[in-house]
Length: 280
Image 1 (tube, rainbow, N blue to C red):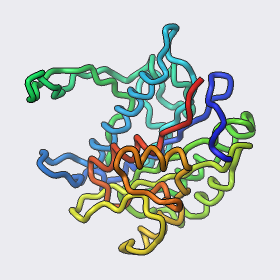
Image 2 (tube, helix red, strand yellow; image 1 turned 90 degrees about the vertical axis):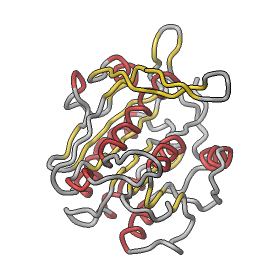
Image 3 (cartoon, rainbow, N blue to C red; image 1 turned 120 degrees about the vertical axis):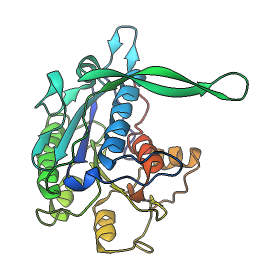
Image 4 (cartoon, rainbow, N blue to C red; image 1 turned 135 degrees about the vertical axis):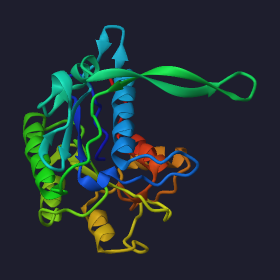
């Protein structure tokens, strides 16, 4: 079976996040009952929260273990590392170095149970590695091409690892040509444990219901949705099992793809899409 190799410090894997930073990311994201929030802010918050939770998950007595290396490539007015601060300009960074080098740590309001059936607001530390940006076009093909170069190097150096996972977060169509060609080259890369995984999340400003992990093009509203679907890898069995445990309807052919994602769908997608095998 593919996607079953153990992830360890001696045999880590990597995540590559492709982050749309085009001008349209300044538009509001779909939300219900919340104050309007820019797509760029919602996606940056979700990604920063994921990096924090990943660091906590891999933390042991001696510190954060390097089960994963992480790259965040932004694409808008420029294409390149979206990390700020000490990690600025770097691509694949060991998770321990990510954990040790946030751009800053903010105090964020957080609601927690009050023990009497209600909620009380408190503050919590919130590390920030990636700032929201909304400027320029959508050079998705170039970003995917850079991901190909990063992942190609990784799998050549670690041919027996759990396959790298690439997650593309975008709100619009590519402005620099057809992204399906570099996407195909990315999915063609593989380790002994299976092909590289490419997942796509389309962030919406509208109120159409999200289309979550579809297994076929049926019901997708336009050519762009069908393009992203075709670019997306099938969810491995362990991710489908986790999605089912979270109440998300999936089937054997479900792809790592969400269209018209709202804030809730963004968070859920990142949780399921980065679910890896047991760590050792």
